Amino acid sequence: MPDQRRMGYHWNLRKVMASRNLWKTSELQPLLKSRGINLSDTQVYRLITGAPERIPARTFAALCDILDCSPNDLFEPFVEIRAAASANAPRHTEGIAAVPNKPIARRIKLLPDPNSAPDE
Image (cartoon, rainbow, N blue to C red; front, side, top):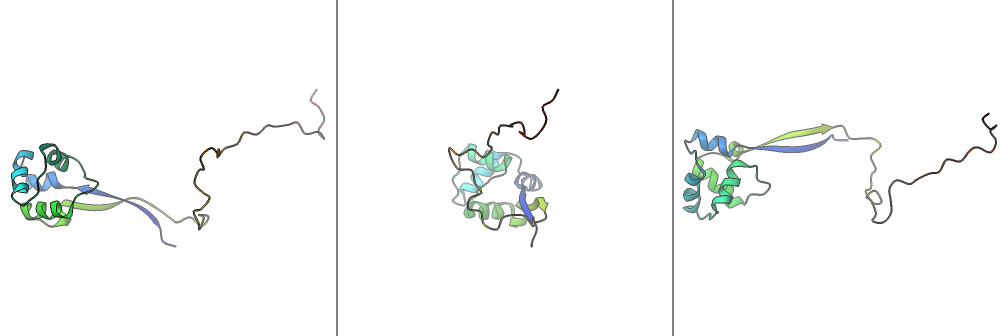
């Protein structure tokens, strides 16, 4: 059984821009616009300073063209968590999820054992 992994990635746009002597978000915006990518100031800022969850393929291709780099230079995947697959993991996921208005934990009431002697 294969191991389980959670993948992450490093977004290296800012580092690649710096290596090409591009330091400001305002320098990238006209270069994107010249390739048909119209992004607002805020969108360009977020693209550079954060790690995008989604990026259109045309925008990604334009960045590679502008920076004269490969996709691997901008996007670097890595394994965040690796765990062995559990032998006790259920094969089917039906019935595992929580059901609305049906609690997962139930309260129990402990009753004294009728066959035991009372404490004195």
